[in-house]
Image (cartoon, rainbow, N blue to C red; front, side, top):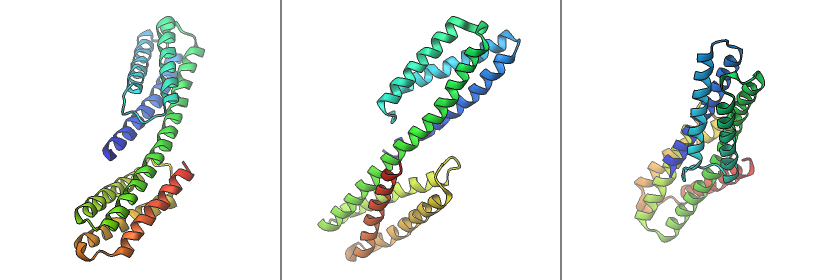
Length: 220
């Protein structure tokens, strides 16, 4: 599940970058006298939107259904304008297509970030509950699995915080990175003492997950 979340983030970022890039190309095509260049830009922009529309039908797409519906409608609009107007479309149509690209690029990342926060909050809470349950039952196998899942989640969070495109304040990213390091270091310690588990440290893991999950949902 964590790898799927990362894949969705990467795909959305690539789409957002392409949208911005082709917005610039459309601006350039509007000023060009070269019909072949205009046709190339319009064709590539249309292909991109056809690809976006196809991705909206993917069951693994984490965008809300309303947004997927709106993007599908926009794809139809781009297709209709591009095919009906072609290279002879007026500057206003070029501007309209470019503006759509830029606005959707920004909105796409905002929506993905919001859904990412919700997904992270869910997994943090889930891992916290698994740790709590394993602590109560005393099942070593269950505890090892819970510790491993929790550590992998925090590795993902640290990776996201170190990404250049994270829009979180630097102080927040630094704090989450420190928490990830704390979890990684002490998970090893806990794993080495399964027969005499440090309940205080295990409790700190559970509290960290709960507090960060609440914070993510409160600021998504």
